[in-house]
Amino acid sequence: MNACGGLGLDRRGYIHAMKSCRSLSVAESIHSQVQHLLHADVQMSNMLLHMYANCGSVERARAVFDGIAPRARNLFSWVLMLSAYARSGHTRQARQVFEAMPEHDLVSWTSILDAYGREGMLGEAWQVFCSMRQRDLVSWAAMLAAFVANGRLDCAKRIFDAMPERNLVSWTSMLSAYAQRRHLYKAKRMFDGMPERDLVCWTAMLVAYAQNAVVEQAKAVFDAMPEWELVCWNAMLAANAQNGRVSDAVALFASMPEKNLCSWNTRLSLEADSGSMDRAKQLFLHEMPEWNVVTMNAMVTAYGQNGHLVEARRVFDAIGKERDVISWNAMLTAYAQHGGGMEEAKLVFDSMPEHNLVSWNVMLCCYGQHGHVGQAKRMFSVLQELEQCDLVSCNSMLSAYASCGELEQAQLMFDSMQERDLFSWNILLSAYAAAGRTVQARQVFGRMPERAVVSWNAVLAAYAQRGTAGSASEALEVLHGMLLVEMPDEVTLVCALLACSRLGQLATGLHLFRSMASDLQLLHATQKHYGCMVDVLSRAGHAEAARDLVAAMPFVPTAQEWRCLLMNSSSGSKLAASRVFALEPNDCAGYVLLANTRSMPQAGALVSTVGICQGASSAT
Image (cartoon, rainbow, N blue to C red; front, side, top):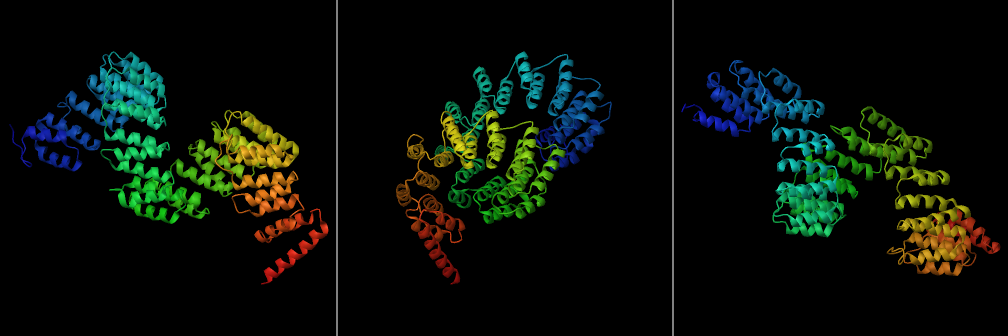
């Protein structure tokens, strides 16, 4: 053996060291110690080239390649240089090396095929694949991976079906491709058809169900697995946490034989998302063994969602140089949702070292919510120029127009959208409903490809709030149609009771009010429901029943309930008026209502008395 200096290794020892090296500084040290051997030993040069490629330095690998005499280069030298470029994404240089090679073998063909596939150059990859005189399992797998990575599942499936042989990697590649694109049925068929399975396959199927919120099937796969690794436990934990199964997630976390930071971060996010802010703080401050930027980001988000801006800012500042775009977006969202104004959100946005689409969309939505349509339009135009608009961007701009009453612009925006979801339709529908334009609201409602409770409520509210008998009758017709397909919520019943009040339909109002805890399965009536029912009774001439309901309701009566009594009955007007004026001393409408009651002389005296009392009160 030839002895080498420096580390005291022989030639074989240095070759072994170069094969296992993954540190650039160590690679440079080894290079300096074998430098004197390279001119006469092409194998050592090839191993040095391969070492630098494994350390991620394609530039140093190229320098070694160029240092090998052209006549001394062998096929292995060329293949190593080609592979280094291909793996590092330098496709143009990889093609130059491939075209300069004096000969090609199966490895070089497969390397250039892989390079094209990684860069999405499917036409070039397919041309290479078809030009290959022979192919092996690796070549077929490279072409399959190229189609999978670029979302061409139809072509990937044809390649998979045409493969002369398949290994576990090929099966798992197709399984993962279907799973990532939510083709769960095809993923399950692929899983069931596998001749053998390893832990990677089981985990891919588990993650497919977990990420697509099919928790029961995820649990079935988890229970059937022959063994569990930490990644399986974490996938099942995340499936429960992300789908609101708090008790299942907590129980699973407690039973985990080991936990890593990913496990703890999922547990922390679970508590924060479920509103258990105190428990989240307990985990963060006292129980978690370590933190990372994901942990800190979760706490910034949790504090921000709950309006604790000081605490959110404190954690954000503590992240320091490790802040990423997720950290900035969490702080930006906190100010946008709870900051009370545009200034803090704008300051954070302008301070961000980089923006992604989430950042732009949060700021766009913030402008819309605060009525700054001009700024929202300018920001949306910038996004259009950058070709970064997505559905969230369009919905935010649509909402900005709608909230500011620019209905024509909202309609134009809606019509120009290439993609719409239920939220898009509801924005436009609610805009017309809020403006009292019931005809347009009903037209939008009729065109909707799908509807949710909020869609029905918007149309119902539009008719109910219009105040005419005809509109109120339309509202009840909408309600009857809704009850056939949707379970109403509290807002639905408020609108329905308001319609009953306008029509004087006491029996219908009483039926709806009483059915809230039974037929409609609502747990309890809110104060708004009681207020509407007081109005129904008062307008129907049942003043005594209305007063009894005000007295018996499990809430402290507001001026609105007393105002309903004052508006529709002269009996008890003195008590109702005194309550209205006590709760809202500056309410001029109360004086007008009192003056319109049937006992005009008494009303006039009461107005005079109350006015004197209010004047004396303000004077003191």
